[in-house]
Length: 430
Image (cartoon, rainbow, N blue to C red; front, side, top):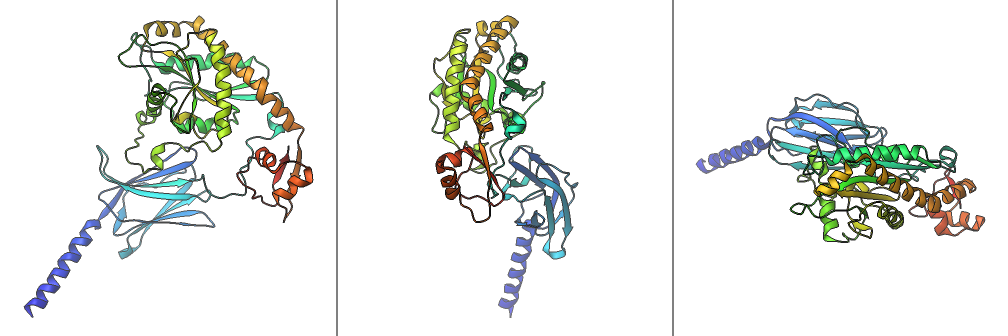
């Protein structure tokens, strides 16, 4: 009898203790951030809590269930793919939060423990990349872009709370980068065939992902990110460099270190990588087509030759590394270091309007040379291409045979990763 009573008491104590782990968990805050391919929703919790996340369709929704929890936070407003947020307490079953979405997403969630000033958090990522669709729409039609127009995205590195490198004379990298971007824009606006777009137009912080997203939104054909290099403990290193993305590692130790420094800029804006899983810690989605890197190297070589005629070069070849700002760009993309801010001579020259103009003119000649050689002929050819509207039951191979083009060229002309096509899709016949 006594043994049975003790057993009942022990079971009751264990049940009470286990329930206390999540009992009374409060969702104290909810916030969201969007970076083009991902909307991140973060729930601030008063204690660690179990959770269950699942998706619903028609309409698209994400549901998050917390056992034995209550909400004491304001509802989220529209942000990225997120269109709204609803909640309801379900008695003993806890708290349910529903995120209303603009489209279907892939969901990833993970819990994060207390770090510095942050407490327990649940992070829910809503990703639109990788969700199956019939095919990616072309960036821009031939009619919209014209046959003599190459859109150049000019990205001034750093900005706002992120000054970048600081010279011995107190010059901020962000200021020189923006001044150079504006000079290059002004030159391109007077150049037939080139349409410049400034990614950062003022002194404010801009995340790396926001920069690539803006380039895509502006339908850019070329992306150039302007920076000024720095090296600790050596004020003698000087000269300009040109970098492209690498998928297989950096081409030199200096390139690897530079990429690490430039990629860390996102942390200054309040973004930390310490709480992300292995996929998210890469910061950005890698390039999906090797030919983009090859095109970047080709353009980089032309740019480097033009810079070398007007400035001292730090390296006489195009270097490669994993620059976050160049990733996820399906266009020739380069990061140009205009000199070394830590070198007093380079710092003085970079503050000279005449030298800035020389560098801007060299960059203009490089972009114009590459565009005239590679991009404009392709645009003119695209205008003359035929179009075919896919009928139900048609296959890509049959369409290729009908127009006497190779299957490989047909895929490339329509940016298709495989041979799947949907009825009603309009294909460009090269």
